[in-house]
Length: 568
Image (cartoon, rainbow, N blue to C red; front, side, top):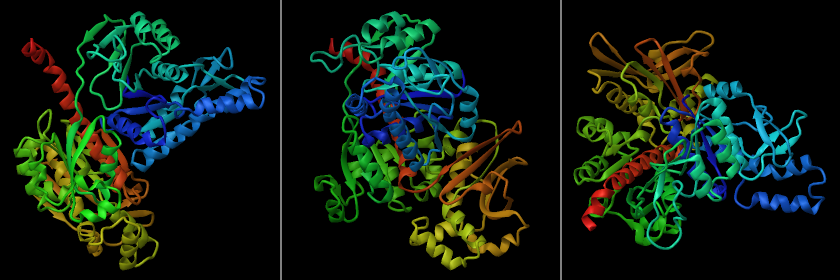
């Protein structure tokens, strides 16, 4: 099986544009695990029915291909909006309507069967971007006329694409799998199938998965997964045998959030949008009235950072910024047994010897992916390898912006002021322009890659450009952070460097971060994406939160037999 996963988002998951962040989190979950994603998207809830009514108001199915074009247009809208949302959150994505990758179908124009598409184009596109978004339900015939794939067509499209791409296919629903009966019905919690045969799935799936989708999978001997976003488990539909498991109803995880600034507010909005998964029990801020005026319930607010320990919570999310008191509070929360998530490199990097043991376990108590690279999953990529020779990257977007403006003839002070006015630079940009921000990120990368800090780290920022000297024609100046294992030690530096403009790292612009990971066999892994800003950093924090959530849920499920025995 390839490293591609096909995710299908139906209207029970993407009910409206307000649910797009949930889909972003699920796509990003797989991207940070090193996979490439094809997201197949249905129209938002109610949109297709509305389009059918409009079609019938002007002639119905008198021209079935015109009817198909109108009714199928809802998928293109939701797919385009998901692509935009992924981009906003720093995940490189591309929209591919069915005509662009030649998705062909035959038969009834309103209940067609897919039979071909340009798989090579999808694979090639996924070498350039992390995710492709595809409208489900719609294809074209050999005369390029629009065809609909009928009820359940988006599921069908997802399975069809996954089969040709040799990819895993996950159908995302509003429940975490197939059950012996409706889990929303009254009475004791029903059992969930961990795996189920195609024949049994036809019997129990009901409207969750359309019969023709299951029959297609059965004929092709193709397994697929049914689950909900964020879940740590699924029902595998395939050859079986069918197995039922107890499925406890878990309470929402209790969360303390430290900070409601640029990043903290983004996290707050995501937590409040999913009350069935997360209960925000406290948000710690400096000026409560400012946040009450912005709509935050006053009973949630506190000015006491030690609520990270005082409150009864499962998870603490730290978005305070700065070294102190954040470092002290994080350590206290970890010592008290809380799971902790932080985006604060300034608190963690100077104290790696203290914090790294909490992050090194298979199920880490401390997660800090957002502290290095924002939405670029650099720490995840590094952590999966044991054959790394060097990590080299552009890790600070403020410096990208200022250096580009200098190349255009703008003065240093003017360029820096412009970066501040646009939000690329902090009011005090010293950490950025001195290279300290990049140094902190490089320290996190070094410890994750090699298990140790560099013996010494030489640092120059863009406030010392004279050290870089003049560049040759066609070169681009970038602040490069690099750590390399050689001669039995680790050697690291942060400094402005002139690069040929065709180099991968030279292409970083604005808030984009780019990283190259050099391997022992000479291979090179390249990562790119937005490294700063509310939504890219929020995406990374939420990625850590979902990982922690899945770990908690997995522990609860694994402990279920012991709990049952105790009750008996």
